[in-house]
Length: 469
Ligand SMILES: [Zn+2]
Image (cartoon, rainbow, N blue to C red; front, side, top):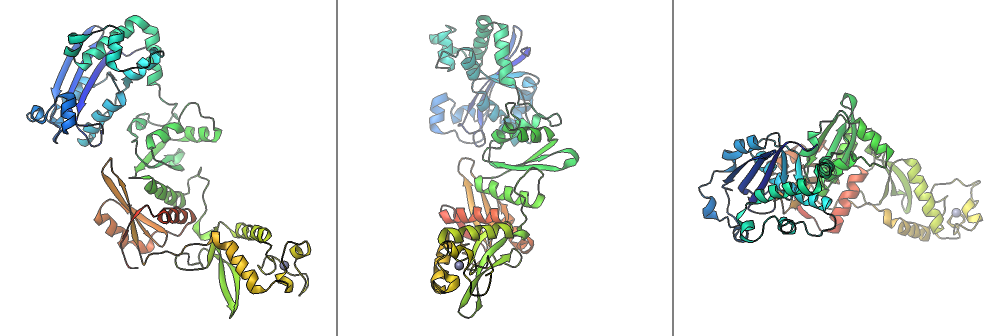
């Protein structure tokens, strides 16, 4: 069934970005059966219209200087659109602008929206062009002067009538149904939430029964990612089971991907969601440290998360979830480089002075029985360990990693000290607050270390030094 009450809508704007640009003209055609009513208003965008846009749509700064701002027409627009199926060319674009304008007023606006471009693609799959003009010409709706004299909403309306006549109600209703179909939502979740999801980077949290935190995820496009969780053609059984358990959902927008990654990593550690696999606590972390046991003799020692100073120590190799993982890695390295397991502390000699088992089968060069000088063995071992070497924190104190989104004109500063993410802020006051409270914040953890080491290592991020210690 196609809803009986329709509203065809067409907008002119100062540009293409609903977050930054503003509406300059609104045309609405309300239709119910054969009865139609139109409404049109110019809108003062409260900013200058770029010259090339003025040329494209003919709405000049002078044209709108006396027009009401959106705040003054918002109530009437909401009233006219209320309870109607919205139909527009490039529905996402038009809907995005209307939503943004309402958002600036602190109001939320929601509607079911139908896109004529998608509809046309669906009903006339053989045709390549779906621009309104080519549709009009193809269907001989209006040509020449008559076409130009009509407003966009009238042309949309005529196109709609044509679809009803030529495709038949049934085919049209099916195409509409398919376009309006929502992902299959978990029974407890408010469907309206899916419409509110922004198309920006960020982190989302799923809560289940009793408000237990089920899952924390991140994406560069929250809307796309979260909707994918609930898509009806889920192939992953685990994911389907998770999505059906969701009662409540929450999200944090971030400026960019790094912000989303850092926040996700921190929330997973702090909140330990049931369905996240990475649940390692930083206190279990361990690393191999190259320490001097007696003057002139160094040895690899396993140090745990609490004892190790990951931030300042040199000579730390690898970050391991536990002792077993650390030992296993060292064992594999010994085998690959013909190093001696006895010298590495992985094996005890059967009797003092006896070679290791590896040497007996030709896999150790004999440091255990003096066939290879210890200094040479150590040098080979350190070279084999190079790629596991942890970087000491290369700054005197806290830094801010600046992440900026040029399109949205927003900026966020991730405050980091000693590989720990202390917080992110969008203002100088926010940064200062994070710095003031930094002593008790953020533990060293493997994911954050890797993330930061990778980003700082690339040298592509903007860094500000924030404190000397
Ligand atoms: Zn050996």
